[in-house]
Length: 293
Image (cartoon, rainbow, N blue to C red):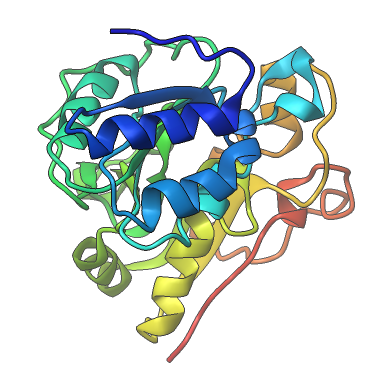
């Protein structure tokens, strides 16, 4: 059954919580940016009571011409701090259904974020089974590992194709990971990647402050891992009206920018190319590192 509660986000979350207390499995479908208006209800009516409410967050990431009020760039940050809250993001349309099925198997609150529009379809595949807290390794290489959250996996796979096209050794390419979960992280995989790689690059259509990359950097710091983390995402600015493609380009979330950075790492370059560090929206303004040991 479907209930349209109108433009009443706080009521929508309370309503979903009430259904959950009565034994139903409610799915609260809402824009990422509008769930902000019901954050108090998420905390006190869902999380505190440990209710199995599923939040399907549409418009997560860049939304194009709808402007700053509709950008879904903060949901990972404001939800991953909450105890027992699971956060997932499908990389393709085909992966959304198994994630929803997995969410229905959980006994606590779950958030699933996905973007406006559709995925490109360039890398559509039959999704692997969803295992709680486990990422999916699509390609294994060395030196550099890309951890892509959500539909940024398309960018990672395009960069992988460019990087490996002319390599003689099959295992000389980069590692590409479909992260799937921002909470819980796949800690076992992160420990493994830190042993075999010098760089971990995280990709997300989300604020760098508090996002998926922050979670990875925190894990690396907490476990004193000897690996460099570079986070690509949205710097601490309000994103203005534009097309989604131009917004992604502005923040370096393109295969061109990622492939260029990987090539630079592999040739020993640690500093940004001349003239790029001070460019508005440059990925070098959003670069952060965490290295211990």
